[in-house]
Image (cartoon, rainbow, N blue to C red):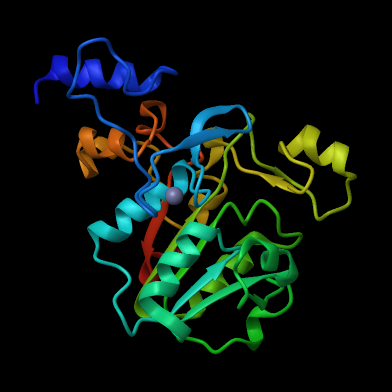
Length: 262
Ligand SMILES: [Zn+2]
């Protein structure tokens, strides 16, 4: 595919009329790489990025691209998934059965979402009670900005649960000009003002990410997703071009257990 064709597809993709150019029958129809659905709806202020069927968003589909690329997980592996989202949960479950362990501080809220086997896990209190080196993969997307305790300690304790050679996969949103956190002392309006959402008590900023998360794990701010995956693939799986480069909050840390810097 030529650059001009790719640009045409990209421009078309970034607009609101997905797949509807006048005489271009080569248009890429975006599809969810978790469930195959071709319908996407708005999510907050982001246009047509949420899968209408499984609820996947950009970061979920990026994680799926990485999982497929590294052929993970394999049957027999054990996966710990914090705050499980539906599409990824179903995918892990289909491969791993009972070796898939979804967890949350409030398991009840998942029943109506169709995820019924969620175990209670308070990241600030319970991690020392879980068996060390018992999981092949630990996954958490947009969780660290919500936990009202020391996030570095939580990362270390989660990493401790990994078997040697295990993968620690996570992502955090970024906003603002600097890292900031509280330990839950602010009210929901103040949380929204300082951290972007009423249930967030911490914000990571790309401007000082190396001074916050980067003291704990390797941080690559110069991400080029198109070096990892083809442009056609990124467009097909509805990863907006604005999310392809740099750490943007939909980016992922895809780390080995041994990558921890502490
Ligand atoms: Zn889907």
